[in-house]
Amino acid sequence: LAVTSKNRGGVQGVKNAIETELAELLERRAVKGMAGAKIRVMVVGIPNVGKSTFINSFAGAARAKAADRPGVTRGKQWVTVGNYDLLDVPGVLWKKFDSMEVAGNLAFIGSIKDDVLDIEALATALLGEMQRMYPERLAERYRLTAEELGQDAYDLLETVGRKRGMLMSGGVVNTERAAITLVDEFRGAKLGRVSLERPEEA
Ligand SMILES: Nc1nc2c(ncn2[C@@H]2O[C@H](COP(=O)(O)OP(=O)(O)O)[C@@H](O)[C@H]2O)c(=O)[nH]1
Ligand SMILES: [Mg+2]
Image 1 (cartoon, rainbow, N blue to C red):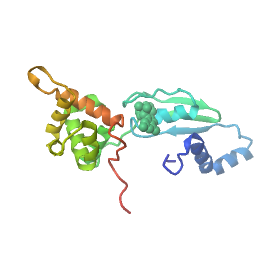
Image 2 (image 1 turned 135 degrees about the vertical axis):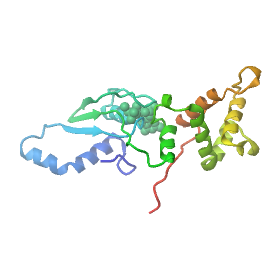
Image 3 (image 1 turned 90 degrees about the vertical axis):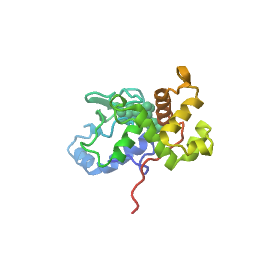
Image 4 (image 1 turned 90 degrees about the horizontal axis):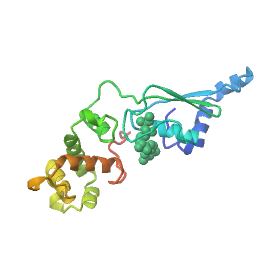
């Protein structure tokens, strides 16, 4: 069962969707006098997508550890809420990415551990995508002139760092700090809501 815009409607919406999906099973259980048996739900998804947060809103309390980075949920954890047993699991990624574009997008949103990535390369690639797809957001957030906005992505990273006063001795821009800031702000939605991928046209 996928949580989508059609069934999100909050926790109750998801419960309704599960109970509709399992109507036959629940009916059979009721006939066998097993109405009290818990509904077991495994919550699966890519790292850092909000699985633990979802379980916590389902439970109405912080029962599963959630954080703004991948790899926080280690091993599986059962959380019992009313007549539900929810299973929180570490995020899963497929073995091989279809394209560098998909791999890059997963890195931008924090589904791949940052320590295995070059943060400046990541920020530069992200800037390139934002220049292409949402230039006005960049211009607004970092108060960029049209000329600054049109620079190569790496030069733009330097400009962002300079504008934020991230200078090292000799006036050299600390591009690593600029990169960390940029990626953090993107993930914190400071650049607004961004869609990196769109459903394929039918
Ligand atoms: N904007 C937004 N952020 C969310 C949502 N759900 C979770 N998050 C944030 O996404 C990050 C990852 O959440 P977490 O539940 O730990 O993801 P998990 O790795 O899939 O278990 C945390 O910083 C959450 O606060 C959501 O619906 N919207
Ligand atoms: Mg988790």
